[in-house]
Amino acid sequence: MSESESATSFTLRPATPHDLAPVTALLVGAHLAPNALDAQFGPQFAVAVDTVSGAVIAAAGIERYGDGDETVGLLRSAVVDAPWRGRGIGAALTHDRLAWAEFASLRAVYLLTETAAEYWPRFGFERTARDAAPAALAASHEWRQGCPASAVAMCLKMPQLRG
Ligand SMILES: CC(C)(COP(=O)(O)OP(=O)(O)OC[C@H]1O[C@@H](n2cnc3c(N)ncnc32)[C@H](O)[C@@H]1OP(=O)(O)O)[C@@H](O)C(=O)NCCC(=O)NCCS
Image (cartoon, rainbow, N blue to C red; front, side, top):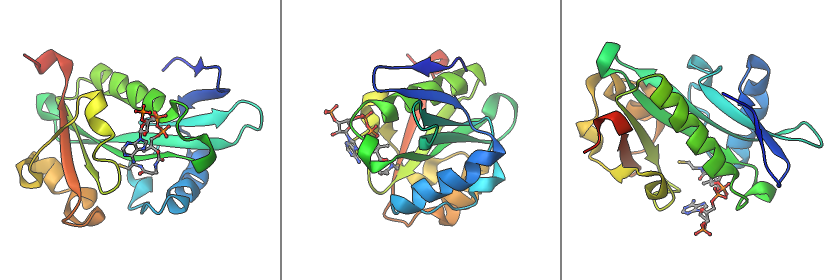
């Protein structure tokens, strides 16, 4: 991932192990559960950093499930610190992670949301049946018990498979 900076003074970079604690704090602050966040935490996640203070102000990550051509992603832990919302940081992180997913040749990217079902369609996500997920994803902690049954499941097929 190339670093990017915008007029709103944030920089995106891959997450490192040192970011686990601040990202957990962001999730807790947004009333999102950091379920098993450490399981795949690392460069599959990206963080946004305040270019002035250096503080981690936002994050999003993609976990991988399955093998080979059938590997899919789970976009999770998308969070922007409240004072920074509405400045395009969530969009920048999402585009960054979807570019990563395409580079990683993921077949599709899924997510579960209780709070932002109206946010994700702008990136191409469509609602899907939770029980229609591939078996490897369906067996994951997040899919089985990380979100309640009321959460909305969404899916984005990656560009090479569209049409
Ligand atoms: C959802 C979230 C990541 C979006 O990040 P952001 O940086 O504020 O969003 P952006 O600046 O990229 O986009 C702003 C747009 O998204 C919309 N939006 C923001 N949060 C939204 C939500 N929860 N549901 C629907 N739309 C939302 C805004 O109304 C705005 O719409 P507009 O472009 O029509 O004016 C952020 O608001 C957040 O951290 N929310 C709390 C945690 C959360 O719910 N995470 C999602 C878990 S699936």
